[in-house]
Image (cartoon, rainbow, N blue to C red; front, side, top):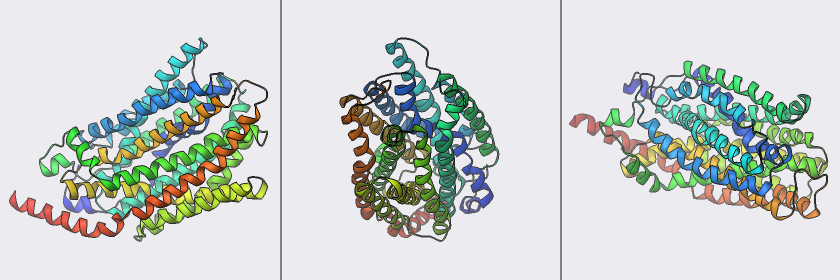
Length: 459
């Protein structure tokens, strides 16, 4: 692995940014499934109480979130010939493929037995395998280059692929399930197909990327221990701000995609229309995502982009509060999707910048532990959102196997689809206003370069 300064500062070529983005074919389908369809599978196919499902997923997500910190530390201390983050794309390829199928092979046991199986399979898939894979791809660009513009562009292109994968999969998912028979076997068959695609994508991403930035221990001679890395992260205010943005983005997806399946089934009276709702959202998202790599490559402020995205999402949400039918529904989802596309294209670049901020402020550089906020936020937000939604449905008398639902359940679904998002987007705007790292970043990098030069002269 070339660790020279020249190689480390060389921008990531566009072709390698594209290959890196294919890693989303490995992880995004299982993320989309757990976010949008897994709760529905557990409640309406396996007949498990929605509240129980919510609690199981919440507890699992708490384990899952903290496992990101451990995984990030392991990645930062991996010194294989192929790098620190990159090897994990190869090492997790087979387990990740198997995880797809494991989620849906729930045995025909008692409800307690099913719940135990769900807990074990979910934590194998998400707490262990997905954690290591996604933590590695979040950290990989930081090990590929020190150039912040191409790094941000690589993240943005990856998010375009993520949006496309999520849009296509969400649109066709229930239709494919129905075409395969609609029962549990249909879910398992489709999961096997997605797992095979995931395996191939992992191998392609591994083969087509290279690391050029030395691990912190190799470049400084200092091996950062986990407790030291955690202490540094806790004192990184911008890390917490980006974590907040990520939590809001995931809760947005819960309120739009997870709740959207129930909204389609019980408000629009056709569960296959869930794909249409996702399509409206992701068409707007595609617009936001497609423009961001070009803007970020030219140095457009990530903080300003987040503000623009937040206001778009808030406007779309307020429109849905006024009316969530017909053209209003389409425009509302498109605006929310466009804002989501803009913000989701910037947060990983913001997160990567917090690595440099943390080194400047605390003297500790820990790329994977810092960027684990990406997966930590996704999982914590998903767990909280899914649990709250499941508990809310259970509290209002929802029964996934019942022919009709009580009016209280219908009202709950409407509120989660319309009112809740407005609160989330207002919080996003507040965080974006407080984020000042874009303005401070050039001076921080200049001082870090001076420190590195001084350290080299001493050596």
